[in-house]
Image (cartoon, rainbow, N blue to C red; front, side, top):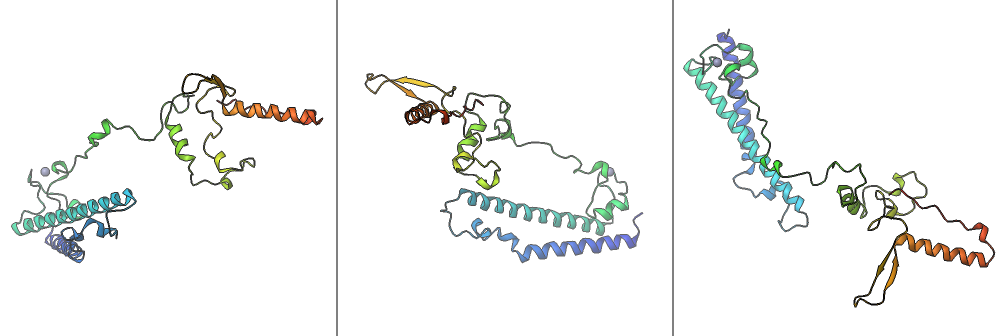
Length: 250
Ligand SMILES: [Zn+2]
């Protein structure tokens, strides 16, 4: 039951809340929506900047300011509406069915104008931005990540970017053989451009002549090691020369 005592305390609360919102809006000059350039909110002097992300931040800040102003103005409107109902003597009654709104609801939400059953705000939208229907994640978990994909997949694009540096340093790894930054990106030893470890290509020069066999990098290394072994065998150290087994992960 909404007693005159409770009504007057709700009214005082509404008036006080309106004062707070109005004071905040005036103190910030409505978040500078009308006067300032959007760049002022993040302190950038120029739009001509090396960082497109800064411009995105400007935009985001401006959108946030607009939303804050809208939210505050909506709350003031709701408070005025409730205060007008108090003057008319209709405060606390559902504007649709005319039944009393429970006092507990009014104490929790003094601007309520409807009972719970008839409130226009009882539907939560589950709408998603329409563009999501055609956008796939630019980089995300792809179904074929776990498989041995032989085409350029999301993992490959990460590796391509990752080899220019990540936040990881050699000290992040416990592998003592990892002495070079170039060994650190994911699967840095993976074959790129060929399938077998030892593989060669037959090619000609630009005129179609001069047919040559081009070994891939691993093949080249293998040939060099054979040459090395040969030299060592000449000096009598054949027993000490060992070829490391090739990594057949891929
Ligand atoms: Zn109602």
